[in-house]
Length: 267
Image (cartoon, rainbow, N blue to C red; front, top):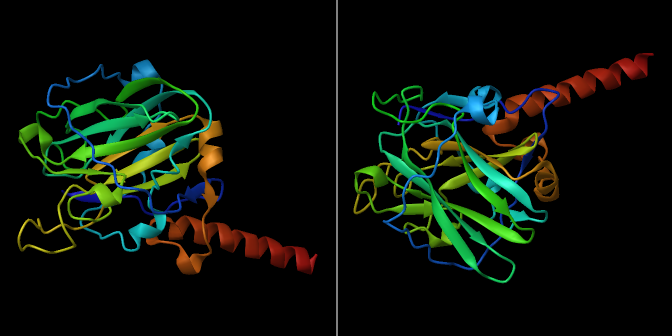
């Protein structure tokens, strides 16, 4: 891991929201070792613009405190409307060669899962790998997802090199019992950040891996469609409970509003 995720969300014209956490029942996820890498499309093919998201990648090993306040609630990542869903690689700050998979649960309970990225590494990432296969903005199409489907995402820590720890959006299903994913809605997309190390920050005993809890080890954007995003979002709280991840941008918005209010009173 060499740099981290997301700070200074956002500018005055940007829309930032956070997902609100609730408790969902635990559900085991089975990683299929026979999965193969689906087609990865370049941004020249998808026309997805990753550049605005790159500005939210910050220096490494900066702990994301209060991450539970902005946790992606798996019971909330629910598609009210059918959509052709895609995921896009934004960046990664991991020493591990991680893998990403998804699981879709239909409204009748039927589950579908598959691999998305078999080797999350890039020559362009914040911790560059000379043989990394990905480029910023590369995407994988999940396909048409029906209305009423819930999506979950799972990171296999160092899976490319045989790692077995799997961490996902369902905190209660993670082996260490800790949150390993944060999510934000930005514009018409959802931004996902993953932490790939087992255990509390700095813990080294037992299975603990001296985690920095920065949630920047794999950063992706999820396209579930504007209408679905709008159905999921809740406004960011006031600055007293706003995380550092969004504080700079929100503070700028509030300052501008105060100035406008003062000018209106003087007029």
